[in-house]
Length: 334
Length: 262
Ligand SMILES: Cc1cc2nc3c(=O)[nH]c(=O)nc-3n(C[C@H](O)[C@H](O)[C@H](O)COP(=O)(O)OP(=O)(O)OC[C@H]3O[C@@H](n4cnc5c(N)ncnc54)[C@H](O)[C@@H]3O)c2cc1C
Ligand SMILES: Nc1ncnc2c1ncn2[C@@H]1O[C@H](COP(=O)(O)O)[C@@H](O)[C@H]1O
Image 1 (cartoon, protein in one colour):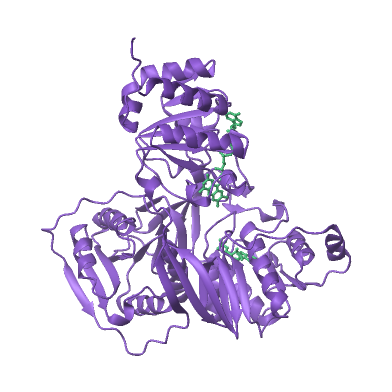
Image 2 (tube, protein in one colour):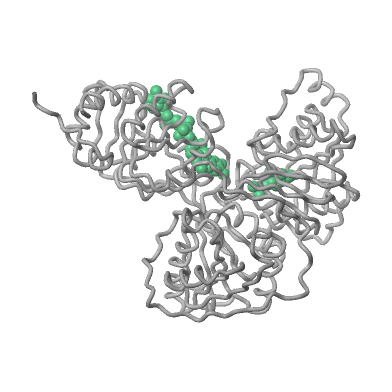
């Protein structure tokens, strides 16, 4: 292990496909800037696509010092093998120290393939990133199926790689006065042909990302007892213009669709008020609600970790409280 | 504290030997997808798992569902393997046991680590085309047409065989296992056990030697807020809650919930 390793470049993959719903690239740039301040590194966004000037400008406005761009009609659509090949060539040419990739579906497939090619480590769904005194990135991730966080490092291999879920870090407000270096690169002509062919791609009509932005979220867990009782939460949520979230056992039991999952494997939320019904508070769940401003938890067990995290801890039956809230709101709202 | 799986606080790795032998949910969907394919396109299904000897249970469960044979990769030297090492071992096992494979199906993620990395990394190691997060699949003349929902897009993709896919839990709901199937799987199961030597990984390197990542420490975070505890009947609590926090809650929901005197 090299002591006091001098970091030179932190790369952030420019995942712009869902820019308006998903600002994970901007969030990673922001964290990248903080890490860079500790080490004097530059923060560099990497963008593949066609007619991507708009995103290049956005990334500079949100903190990138440098943007590496390959702009070509061939890259009009995301292509996994091609993007992997391009990224691997760039890494081999330029030796970045760190690569951060948003844990979108694309990113979660893209990152492990790059790590495999580079024979380096990758940690998934980090909730924290830092640089230690040796100049090595410490990646904190929920782990081992229990209520624990693990600090993971990749001491020897480079680049050090991590995927991070949308909503984990806060973006820096844009500053369109900022300038950055834009490095335009040619599409190499020795690229192998993409073996997987995209036949059709349509923006799905499914609701997308509403819960991430919701001011009020009603979350239910296994403690709700049954599908029928869980459904009562919908009535409560409707009265409060709230979105509904759920824990994993609820999804597995099919009480609600998997879109509603809040946690490490689901969505990050930051409501002004969060109601939590019958949830124990496992780390995989609570990692995603850290940014909730005010939490009201209902649990029969006053010692549940969720209760320790709440501003108001209600020791009672979740169904009874849900029903009483519905009744009381109907009476009060006019 | 809830802990679904036992972990070893010293090494920070899972004590997989203590975990119930049970197929990972996404893998069960992957097996179901393979069984459906086999209905129309006669083929042989091999199930491979890497783990402690007890992981043989997983293979028996898979055979009871309808797989043809099972292969267990078990070796004291695989302990501590991260995803890079795991994918190398599994890819070499595939090359040894099924050199002429048409399709590798993985779960999209495991429920204990949920990294979702092993499938895409096996794809790279085998150097075949691969697609992750597959919901639906259909085979036409050695070309697999798949559908998936990816980052808000519904995608249709074509992939030539041989290839690898990772399967979600959205479709291909696994079949129930019949009792007779389960009995057969225990009496006449075709299960082979291989160690690292058998698959050509005899360099003496352990799982952790092959793993670029290191775990520095594992800890339970404690968040304790100075909170208000409410007890009593549900009706009373709710009254009190709305009276005390009418501004906060009312402001967030955009409605006036103040008690109106009438
Ligand atoms: C790799 C991995 C990833 C994961 N990702 C996620 C994730 O993204 N999101 C997620 O949520 N989970 C995730 N999990 C699962 C997580 O570890 C927990 O198992 C899960 O969050 C627990 O859900 P729960 O609180 O609803 O259920 P439980 O832990 O069973 O808790 C139920 C709670 O309800 C209370 N209760 C029971 N009856 C009542 C009643 N009548 N009234 C009031 N309270 C009652 C109980 O006291 C208890 O505290 C993941 C696990 C792993 C291993
Ligand atoms: N030890 C293992 N044995 C067999 N398959 C595995 C093993 N670990 C991971 N996989 C496969 O890789 C997928 C993703 O695992 P993971 O990257 O751990 O989330 C799983 O659904 C399995 O199909």
